[in-house]
Amino acid sequence: MLKHAALLLLLAVSVFGCDPAPVDPPAPAPKVENPPPANPITSEPTKEEPEAQDPSFNAKRVYQLKDLKAETFKVNGKEIKVWIMDDDGKREEGMMWLTEKEVKDNEGMLFVFSNSEPRTFWMQNTVLPLDIAYIDPKGKVLNVAKGKSYDETGLPSKGSAQFVLELKQGQAEKFGIKAGTVLDLPKVKAEN
Image 1 (tube, rainbow, N blue to C red):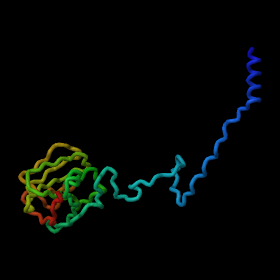
Image 2 (image 1 turned 90 degrees about the vertical axis):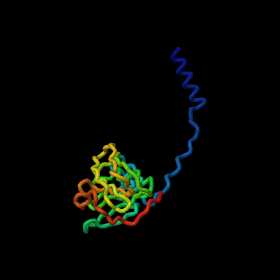
Image 3 (image 1 turned 30 degrees about the horizontal axis):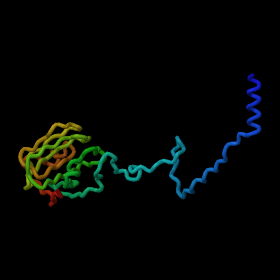
Image 4 (image 1 turned 120 degrees about the vertical axis):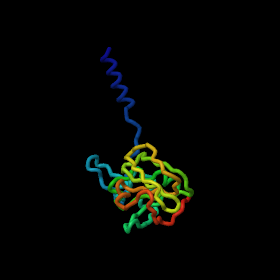
């Protein structure tokens, strides 16, 4: 019985054929003028990452340092370069995700507010330990708080502050910035 079934199947294939429907050949690949370099492990083209194009790019940050407005001012004869954090988005991000190699000892951020009131900063997502100097509208330092990496404990001002200066921890002391110091801050205003 099995022999007959196999014989019938062979006969059916030879009579009716078993030629599949014709298939169009694949379209040729488009010519690439300057193909990206291949990944040596997978032989696939590598994608150009932004950090490969710009070593100062920090993928975790919304506001790249190179795109922020910067000002310089002097304290006790020493210059400090500050990135101006003058709107809600910039102030919210602050120095989050910045690393030791991205911030020099004479660099920091100046947070500018449109009014003076008691303020509290914290260190959420902040890699670098910081000195946080709260400053009144006339440039007088109210107090300097020490922020620990990633610590979400609130660090309050001792009075109403319109400006906040953040520096790498230890730099406030090196510049002579302490409660009572009057700073000649850049003339900047808050955008909102």
